[in-house]
Length: 257
Length: 267
Image 1: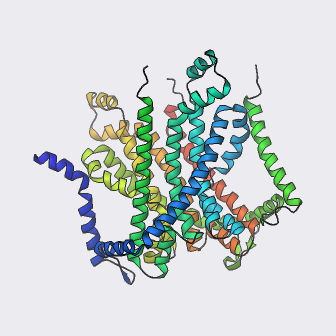
Image 2: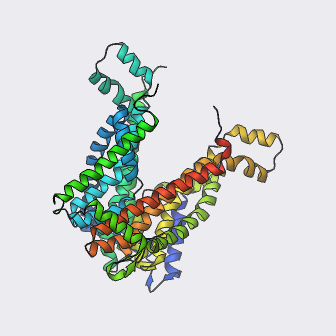
Image 3: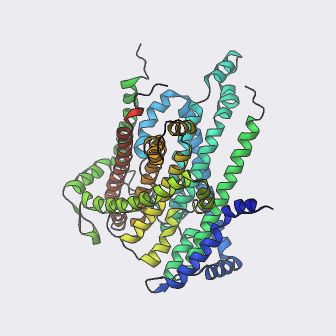
């Protein structure tokens, strides 16, 4: 391989060794307070230990369950409502101002209320995840349905399609790319809100684990947990992207304009 | 022909929904059906809201509390953290959009770090920075940094090449090019980043205050939960939402003011 080729590939990955070196130096020479900052090697050891222990997998599983549960419920409600609101102007006018009042409120603000009514546990956490992921999915679904090209609808009506066929065969498929984008965004929010919920209101999962590590004075576990959170989030996001790309690409293959 | 869904009638519909919601809530609570859920009636919430704004209520450890006093603390942290994010995020984003090599260097690091929720930094900063203003400012900074820098980068990258070429052909120097062409073209995208970043910052400060329980609106609603005052919680939530809305509208207004040239655009 020529030098420029190596250089191009190197450019993309050189941040890893750079980061590791900077980090080791930081750990060695900088002292924040009385506790030494853990070095990459220690963290990797801790991470591996937690993995072998099984506790990491257990926490990952718990977090995935929380987020999956909340996200699917939220997606179900948001997509249904979104299609209804996007299609029917009357419903949209009725509901939109009300939803716009609620939308700016950050999910974290609802946390004390949810904990007050339902206490600590799975339900309040799930409720928060539902709230966090609801609006991106809803807004993108409405957008997708509203932007279905009028000529498709007209063509279908001219050909004599009934209302139900129109919805299922034309409108929903046409809006699907937007819905997928909304789902991907909503999942990112769900993951974010999940961590907040786990840190405060839920007694299991990755968020809870890193909080616990603060009280047991294990900064290596904290960082190991953070890395896991990031990796799982990245992995799931990439999964979504694959789904989105594959589906939209497959969908648009046969389109001749 | 004015139809049912136009203008004032549209406002009417939405308003009716909101009024209906509050009406139902009041009725249900008057019948005592909400007792099991410990949710207070709307009139209690509004009374408490008014009191919090004007007089101040005693809330456990926090002492005499007014809404504005708490909001001031939260907003202070948001300001510091957000401007820090702006000061670092904007140049980095600009550089990444301007220089392809820099982008190649940093891009993968971004992809790796972006899915990490900003709130995940809280335990680490609690451990090393302690439960004080520093923790919340740090979390706000991290949260706002990525939207600002990524959107700035995308905005700079998407400046239409023909504008740049036209400007260079007319003999602009590099500084003039940046000032007169690139920044104005990229401004909408940059503002999108600022808007998202500010939204995240506000959400994060509320959450951070819940965990670190100091002062501020998040601390207020968490304390209210501990002293069993759901009306304070709801008043706090309303106020937090109002500020969030106000911040977003403020940025949009700033955007409109700065980009007056776009207002009369006819395409």
